Image (cartoon, rainbow, N blue to C red):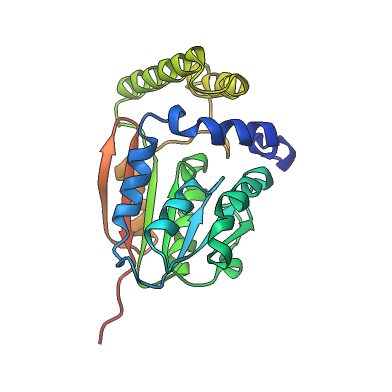
Length: 251
């Protein structure tokens, strides 16, 4: 996908999504709470966290509030999203930083070694090979014993069940738009989502589309990347939270 075609490079689209996100996703707050709850560090621990595809910084804000000694970097390819993140995270001073980079690129040198890598509603936009490369880079970014936590969209194995859940989600967004619960500026984004995911359901996916896989498929990719103790700690409808640990060095 060319950078100029990336839908979140438009300030209006990024602002509309940020305003509507908690209502667009029926499980938005549950997913983010489950990601924060999966961090195994004590409240006072001094840790470094990387938020992949962190967008406007909503998850980052939760983590920085929950862990007052944490330092967190939001990595995202959208300058409009990162501008929103900088404003949201300004109260945390030098504990928060942003890096403008695509998940598909080599970003390890920009963030260094961290205690945890987290992500919400971002990695499902990558093609299978891109996911595998990203997971290998996440493994390399983590300290021994560190965790990767992904709260994302996952498809069921059944195609019919997958289509039914997409229809259910579409009706949820349409109702929120009609009631005024989400801004009318989100309507073009919803139209694009319906075209890509419902009207073109059987069309080949490209990078940047919704390229959902099953939880089991992602667990397999994470194990192939070197992670151990990989498990889904929360799952509901199209959303789930998968946690993977990098083996601690012993002896």
